[in-house]
Amino acid sequence: MRVVVVDDEAPARDELIYLLNQHSGLEVVGEADDAQCALQVLRKERPDVVFLDIAMPGGDGMEVARQLARLTDPPLVVFATAYHQHALKAFTVNAVDYLLKPFSKERVAETIEKLRRLVNQDQSNNLLRQKIAVHDNDLIKLLDPSDIVYAGRQGRDVVIKTDNSCYTANHTLQSLEQRLANRRFFRPHHGYLVNVDKIEKIEPAFQGYQLVMKDNESSRVPVSRSGMKEIRRLLDI
Image 1 (cartoon, rainbow, N blue to C red):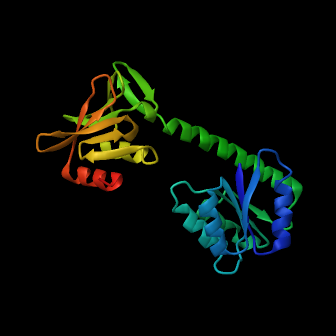
Image 2 (image 1 turned 45 degrees about the horizontal axis):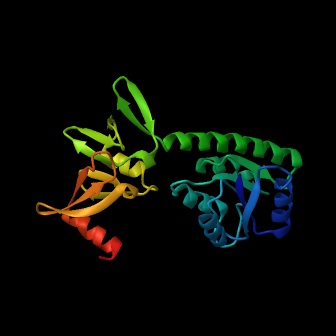
Image 3 (image 1 turned 180 degrees about the vertical axis):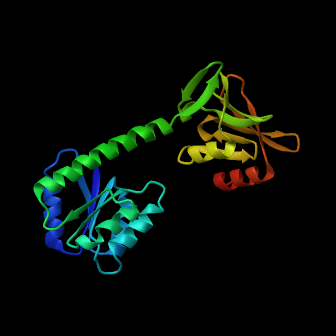
C-alpha cells in the first residue's frame, strides 16, 4: 500500500510517518507541507492513500480532496488534523477516516486495517474490470485485452475477434474504447477498434487503406480518412 503524508508541521508529519512505518506492506512514497506541493506529489506518485491535514498554507486539505476526487483513480483520503470540528464536513468528500492529533498507535492501526480492506477490495475489482466479457453460446467468457485482435460493429451487435474465434459482446464500441483506454488500442474507423500489437501491415484498398491483422484469417479492417491521417501523424509517415 503506497502512502503520501501531507502536513505543514514537520513534527506532526514525522510522527505520523513513524507510526505508519511500523506496519508491514505499507510504504510512504512521498510527503508535502502545503496544498500546492501536495497536489504535485500526489499526481506524480499516484498513491493508494493520502493522509491529509486540513489547515495548510496555500489552500486547505478539503480543497485538495475535492481536486483528487476528479481524478480517474483517486487515492483513499484520511484526514489527519488537530481540528475535530471539520469531521462531519470531511465525509462529504468521501474521506475514509478522520484522525485527531496527537496520533495514537492504536488509532492509526485501526485506520490502516480499514485501508487494507478497502485497497484489497479495490484491487480485486480492478482486476475483474480488466477482463472483457463476451458471449460464447450459453457461456460468458472473460477475455484478456491482449488477446483481442479487433472489435467491430456487425449490424446491431459488436463482435470481438481473437486469433481463432469471434464473439458477441454487450459493450458498445464507445464503452469498449473507454474500458481499454489505458491499453494499446486505436480507433482507425468509427466502426472498429483495433489492438495496435495485432496490426501486421497497412495496405491500399478501394478508396483508401486497410489494416491487415495478425489473426488466423489475416482480417482486414478499414481505415477512415481521419484514421489514416492520425496513423500518418503517429508514425511520422
